[in-house]
Length: 608
Image (cartoon, rainbow, N blue to C red; front, side):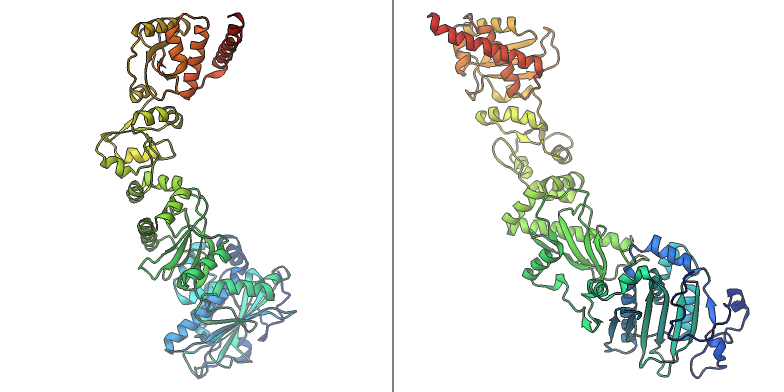
């Protein structure tokens, strides 16, 4: 057990053996401890400074604090600052108009870190009650329960000092009694503490805490670290907090800054230039803040954490539990107002109040998107462009986001970008495809035929369509075979030539049902699509385009030399244009056919 600082207390007193809890319980409560000035039966000096034993070994409590409650030893300073500001608030309730201060002196050499406040202070009974019983359990849940009242908060905050030190000294003078004495408490990591009337009283009401750091905890108490931590914790507190005589509080919070300063704050603190700023006020529990729209694509379900405060005190640098999980496109800085904190004071409790706040903030975000869409379509378009996939994921799951996107997000069609509401309002069935390759295979044909096809091949597009039209009455899914209906081919005038070409093609393309017709665009030589095996044994269809120059030439001389190679080449080309996986065998067929055609083309003029 470390005892390095045990003899460095400012109020040492005699050192009798530890007073066991059972002995205290059997003794008169007025005989074993000091009483306030003017009270009955003043305690003898030796008993006044008697060490008393915590209800449990403090080492176990520190283990709970360090391994199960707090994320880092740095929180000891925040706990002391929170205790100090709570004490100032309590005194202001006793003395309306009172405005005190918190003063922090960083550790130097052998000197401890000191935190002093002008707050309400503690009486001897309050000090004994909170410090002798706060360690009554090593269960994390009991700490959460203790946080529900001021003394419990103060006690847990004081115990957090043992994360960095073995000895903690406290002097406190209550503001409730103008004649109150200054009470000294010295706690040690061996599980003992002493309470006595201080030999060096405080000049006025308030509390002073001295933390004697262990060697491995000294870095947390030195000037650079203390200043940086305190400035981060209390910069937005509306009370004076001074670190080594330097004011680190009363900085205007970002939600109260002008827009230009909010943008600068985001650049300096969060490291990006936001696309926009969303005010976040829930109108419940005094929750306030602002959200910054990310200028880069973020993944749904992987929110960048928000910076959270509680009445101006920093709670967390990166927390993702206050805004809705779907708000992935936004990073926020929020003050939780009256939302209750967890036992560690590093997050807000998951309560019904937080659920309501989260829902209201979500509605604020949605409302802001709607307003921006109307007033700043350029900014809205930028948000849609960057975060389209994520917003679609939300629309597939939630009606509110779906209602927004169906009227504002453009979807690609063969007749230009359209919103889903605009497509529905046209009154005609809306054909759509859910496969990107199938859309690519149809788009040129549909454009030239003047047919509208919705590209619903993006992530979550099909789910949105299904949610909007669960009965399939408005939107109609297309398959590969529908490319023929979209092209709307017409019979050729040379019916005899078409029959001859079909006969030659069928002889050289087994399993393919071949037709000859005219369709646009003229640059597409053929349409191909797969189908289920038919009675005649065919498994795919092929429409040769009579408007294409190569097919027109074959119509004129269907039995000419090279017709078979040309038809095989056209077949594979049609499969490629249809986005089919042709495989090595078909690729070889195409290469052989092209080679034969080249040979014929070169040989033809030489023999003519």
